[in-house]
Image (cartoon, rainbow, N blue to C red; front, side, top):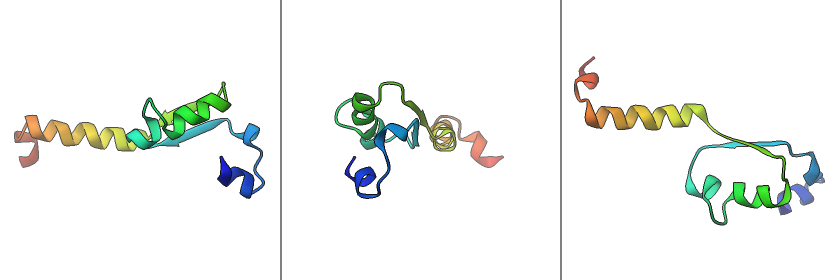
Length: 70
C-alpha cells in the first residue's frame, strides 16, 4: 500500500493482481491478496498459469517417471 502512495498511484485504480501462487502472495492470512481484498472489494486476482502448469508438470514427473524418458 505504501508503495502505491509513494509513487502517487491512486489505490482505487487497481483493478487486478497477478502473481505466482506462493503463500506470501495468495495465502489466507496476511498475504498480499488478502490485504488487497480488504481494501478493494471488486479486485480480480489470478495466479500465474505458467507457474501453475510448471508445478503440475513437476508433480507429474514424480509419479510417472516414464515421462522423463520421453
